[in-house]
Length: 535
Image (cartoon, rainbow, N blue to C red; front, side):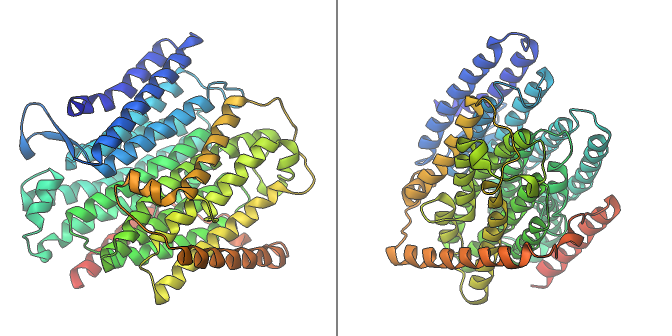
């Protein structure tokens, strides 16, 4: 029965989008969309529960097997579908009263269209459908970014889409070569054929496809494009939240799927790339004054950490690293959406995005301050919060130098949010306003959810991923001690180093031109080709 509903998972958001576009003038229209989205989340939850025991399949078009277009929901896809629906519901509630940024019918239409394309991406197992859905979602995001038609936004949006065209050409060429080799476009069928093939025949398609996916993940050397797009003047905080919280997670989801198809090829390479990306992004985050740029670079750092954790799981065969990485994707999506939505409210209260001018948040709005504190503790990996549990399992198999590097990344994350936390204290220059209970309710709800997922972390992993995990009391104590030491050291570094002199000022405006970005994509492709071909 559930299999027959799979196509409707894509259709429902599109119906909501059209409904809101046609009836945007009616006050009740948003409430109807909200109720529909809530019912949609119930359906996604039922699908999540059902997928724990079986993979749900449906053939679209009447062709069975790999010849038809198959929609499949396994446990991983169900988790991402539920997460997507939940966070879009949060954004809908957040925007019910648009006092901070005016939203029109086109905005709502594009918002739900984006939800439908992301759900389709998680449902499909067809290589070409992935290409189409990624392209559609990119166009929708670009239009949302250029929504206000400001000159800078138009230029950045066109640059964004041109880079995406180049990136997806690598994917398309890799797909064509892979189809020539394996003769199918279905992921499961291709994985079965690839398992029997000589690795040398797969080097070129692997390098082409993974270059495009790495670029979509904003891995080094393209780690600047996502932050720059998120920080565009006039672009909405809700769009930045969805890009950092969900859109980039779609690229990581594809990374997981294609690593499965290719049997974990190149894991050692992406382990290194993920670590270097995380460290570089942390340094760039510390250099920023714009609150959105700091959060966006922090996203890239966590993406690098997740890619490193997934690759670590493939390299050493540790299931805990893979499980922790997936759980960290869920945690980061929840917390980062919360932080970007909070940044929108904070910027409105203080009339600035300069984090050095935002002080005394608890005095201006205790509820917003509490929500922000919960989100910061979650992303920093504080004990009893979701980030603590996911980071524990993500780096479970890392020892020696790798263990040290993972600790460096976690320390860097803590340092970034120690600097961010300066907004809680000091003399306030903000203006207190009448509370918007829709927005405050969303960010507080996401904050307490972060705490709940930390307290019941192992149980949540067992439910979401259907994987039994064990976090020993001594392991918890050890990681708590590491966090406490890292926090103390981060406070000292912030107080006696970062506040004394702006050492990272030269990196604040670091960016890549279009030519350099395109050239770096080619260099990355050559590096993957050589590394995988030689090793």
